[in-house]
Image (cartoon, rainbow, N blue to C red):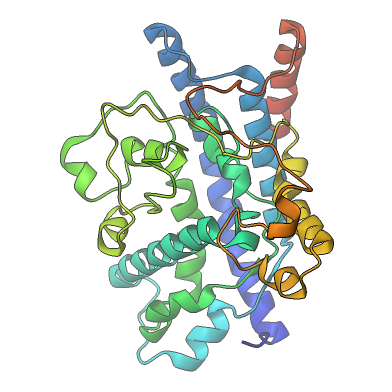
Length: 336
C-alpha cells in the first residue's frame, strides 16, 4: 500500500463533498420527518421503542459525523480516482445506467466486507461501536455514525468498478446515497416484508444485526442487499421465539457521542500499555473484537453484560423541560 498523489486526493475529496452536500440537503428533512412518523406510530400502537435522551444522543452523533464529513477530515490510503486512472480496462460513460448499476453493486460489496471486518477486528470495532451503542432500536439509531474513522483502508475493494472504468463522480454520488438508503430499516415497527426478505436488507434482518442475543450476534452485515450474507455464511433470520435485545455486551454507559466514539480505542491503548507480553502489545489491535491479553483481564476488568435478558438499561434522570429543550436545540442544529 502507498499514499496517493495529492492532486488525486483533492479531486476525490472535492467530488465526494459536492455530492454529499447536495444529497444531505435533501435527505435530512426526510430523516426527521420519518422519525416523527415513527414516534406517532409508536404512540398509536402503545409501543415503547424511543427514549428521549437516547435519541438525542443519536441525533448528536449524527451531527458530529456530518461535521467531520463536511470538513473532509480523513485520508485514503488509495483513492478511487487513483485506482480507476491506472487499472481501468474500459471507461463507462458517467450518464450510463450500467455505470450506476455496477457502481452501486460494487459499493455494496465493499460495504459488506468493511462492515464485517469492523465487527471482527479489534481496532476496527472502534469505528463502528457508536452505531451499536444504543440499547434501543429506532430510526434515530441510524444516525449514530462514527467520527473516529479518519483513515479509509478499503478503497481497493472497489477494484471491480475501477476495472470497468466507472467514473469517480458516479461513485461519489453513489457513496452518500448508499449510506442514506440504510436509514429506513432501523425500526421495530415494520414486520417481515415477504419476497423482499430474499433480496434486500429489511428491518427484520437489521434487527438481528443490532441484537446481542447469542443467536444473533455478528450476523447480517449486508447494507442494501442481503444476498452477500447468504453467500458468505453470515445470514441469520429473525426468529419468532427469540426477541432481539439491543446494545453492546460491553455497555458504553454514556450519552456523550465523543466518549462513545473513542471508548474502545482507549481500552485497546490501556491493554497494550498494561500487558507485559510484547507480542500481546502488538496483536491486541488485530485480534478478534473483544480479545484482551490474559494478564490484564483479571487485573483490569471491564463492565460486561452476562445475561442479555436481565440487565438494567443505561438511563439518567432528566426533567421533561430539559428533554424538551434538548430537542429544540437539536432541531436548530439540524436546520440552521
